Length: 125
Image 1 (spheres, rainbow, N blue to C red):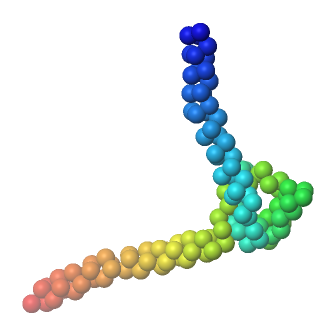
Image 2: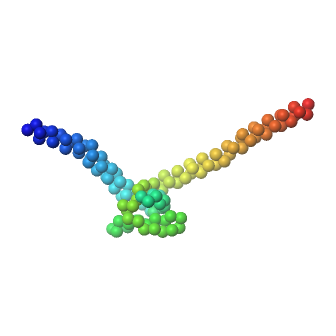
Image 3: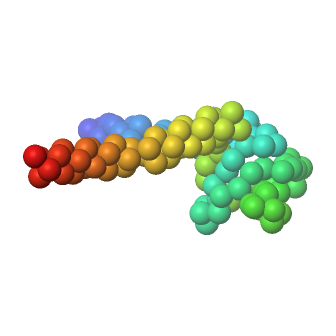
């Protein structure tokens, strides 16, 4: 009798530590794939980045535009989906960060130029 209880407890622990989290992860992935639409940015399991051109739910395929090259993949090959609105926001932030970093190096050079000019004025005196 005690052995049966131990087996039931062991199976219960196995279910809650291994099987249940995996089912949740599969459901989350399925929701991500169901919410895909044209224009969303994606990354495949092979690491290819592109934009969804068309989705065929019956054949379970997706056509991806990767810099003008159109490729067809199975839906299972998609690892990550970034909605179109979020993708443009991320690109805008990256552009802003690049613009800010381009103007930052000018400041130290200006300070160095000011130091030189003050040294030159001391030498002239």
